[in-house]
Image 1: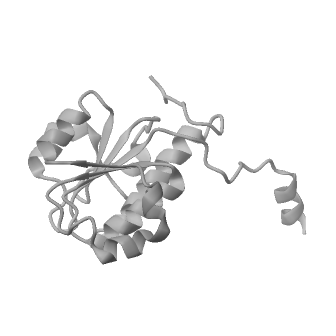
Image 2 (image 1 turned 90 degrees about the horizontal axis):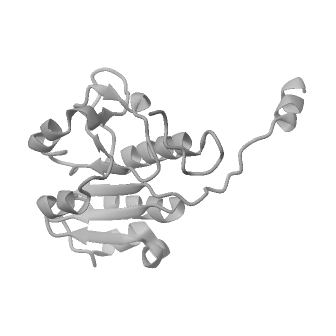
Image 3 (image 1 turned 180 degrees about the vertical axis):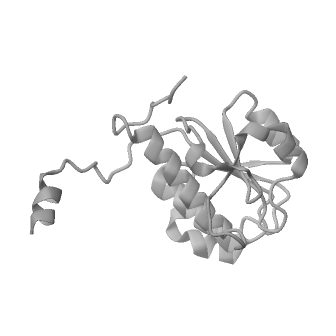
Length: 180
């Protein structure tokens, strides 16, 4: 009974997400249902989705649309012709490269509103040359030793919501620019 009273007296955050400027990018995704699930995640969280060709499916794929269901028309989607065009597009933006081989924990990242959350393909991950270009921006989701990496859609959800938690933590609104 005491626990219930304590919880009811606490000021809990509003369960509605305020607007933000985070963006998710998938580099050469291969599996349509994963991309569809991430599209649904992006719509429900107010996040832009950027897909980088080549894709392992066509955008009209039935499994892609089925995963995203009726969310697809509300998706803020940009498709880039290739990796070079994508990185040229985001030049100057803050980015985080999500890799199962990263040495820095997701929990050590200092996310800011406007950051790019970048994921590689399900079969190859992010090209090593890209990881080598941004070594301080490579993060990994902590997991039990010896286990394979998480599903791409699951990983995208974990990283996105940790970033949202950080940028809304101080005021309940985006705009927290973190420490300097």
